[in-house]
Length: 215
Image (cartoon, rainbow, N blue to C red; front, side, top):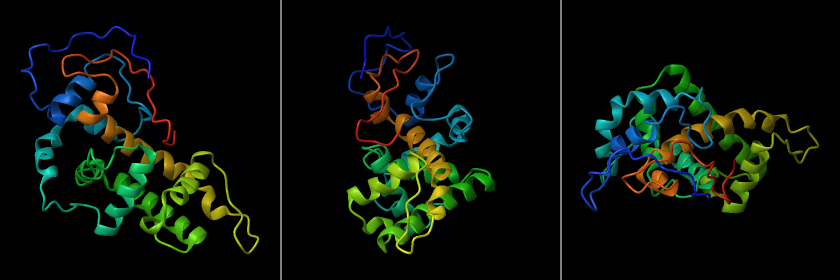
C-alpha cells in the first residue's frame, strides 16, 4: 500500500496507547472533505450511518461475550461472518458482522430486506453448486462463488441450464461488499491498515485493497 501522501493532523493530543473507540475512528475517517471509503460507493446506505454516528454509543456492547444479533438470525449472522472474512480478510476479528447487525437494526426496511436477500442469494448459490450451506464450504469454494459474483459471470449447472440463478449475484455482492468494507474500514483495525496511527488520517485514501480479497 502506498503511504507517501502527506497526512493532515486531526488530533495530536491523544494519550499514548489509549484505545480508540469506533466513534472516534469514524469521526476522523470522515473529517476530510471528499473522503471516500475503499470499496464503498458513496450512494451506499452505510455512508449515512457513518456520517450520522447516532448508533456509535452502542458499539461498546459489541464485544460482549454473550453478544447476540439484534436484527439478523443466527444462520444469517453465520453466513455474514463467512462472506465478510473472504471479501475483506480481518473482518471477523474486527467484528464487522456485529457492527452491521447494529446498523441494520435501525435502518430502513428496504435496506434490511436487500441485505437479507443478498445473504439468501449466496446461500442459494452455495446449495446449487455444492449442495451445502455456505458456512460448510471451504475457503476455495466460497472464493469461487464470490469471484464469479464479482465478475458478473454465471455458471452452467449440472442439468445444462444457463446459470441464471447466479446472474443476479453481482448486485448482491456489491451490496454486501459495501456494508462489509464500510464496517471494516471504519473500525480501528481498518483505519490502522490505511495508515492511521491515532494522530493522523489520510486526506484521501490510497485505494488500499486486500490482495486476497474480492474487489
